[in-house]
Image (cartoon, rainbow, N blue to C red; front, side, top):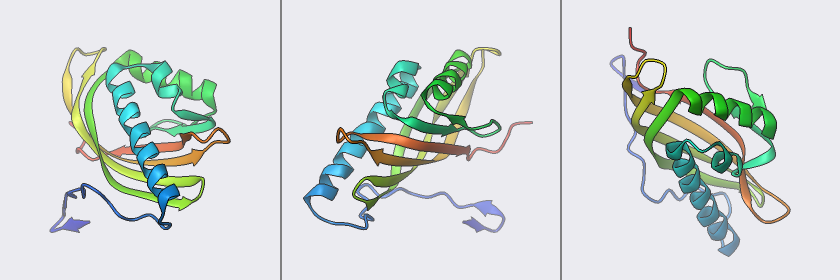
Length: 158
């Protein structure tokens, strides 16, 4: 949303209540998805390709800005190898919305902020993004990232 030409920042709710279904199964799904999000935040800050990849579905898709989509675990692995070779993250995710859309599908909309170290320049820059994660529950009962896309919310530096 914009106001007077400037983006209006969103203050995430601490416990969004937006799931389409209610009950114990939904509450369990929300807890499990929040745990995956915390693990993803840790994997990103550790720069661990293996830890990030373990959270993805076999046919997962990673869609970073300014890049083609990485489809499937091997392509996702290569994309994270490239990202972590260049960038060191110190970020924190805030869940703005978590919706269980069906018994085995959910989405999470987040905002993240922190800093990023750049190996090629040695500089550290402010980091802020908005993200959309789509989760699918596998046959083993585990929730995994099926699709992940993000876009920066900081204006580009000149």
